[in-house]
Image 1 (spheres, rainbow, N blue to C red):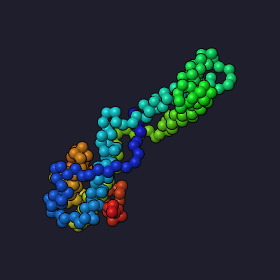
Image 2: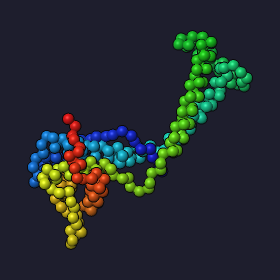
Image 3: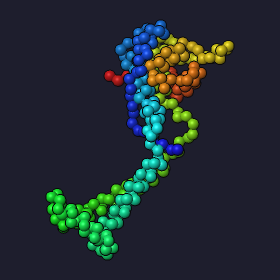
Length: 245
């Protein structure tokens, strides 16, 4: 089922209910962050949390996603109703019309003429003629919007690509670079589990993400990190991004 992607950008504060950023740095044996470096880490992770909430978090709740088919049905309903109103109110203008439509317009005009903002039957007819023109324009817009939604590319099946993880990875890379830890992950020959100081840092910093954001297992986290590293070209990315002033 196709869904309409949300636009814009989101930002959220770190999930410091279990542990603080300072405590994470201390537990890793890393040096304390300077104000500038802490701002960078909080900015990068805040973007990650915000983007996750926008694309995968509460947006996944029942009824939260914007279903394209439902939107098209609503737009078609609006357009159809306005088209019908447009046809019926056409009796407000000169020409041949069905006696039923003429009477409907007459009743509406009579009621409108009693409105102080309209004031007379003549002004009521002008008001209805203007309304008809606007209704036709809005109906056309609704039909056009309906068609434009049909041109949206269909989303592939499977899990959503976790682009928000790139910002988290940038934060991990920055913290590790400050402590001369290379952004590498190795696999233990015996346990087949991922390990490295970089990976330990990622697991520790992951505690500052919303619990639903965290990888379900160490191998899953390692896979996310490797994918993000490829997308963001780890070398130099931390230096190219600057925290907000």
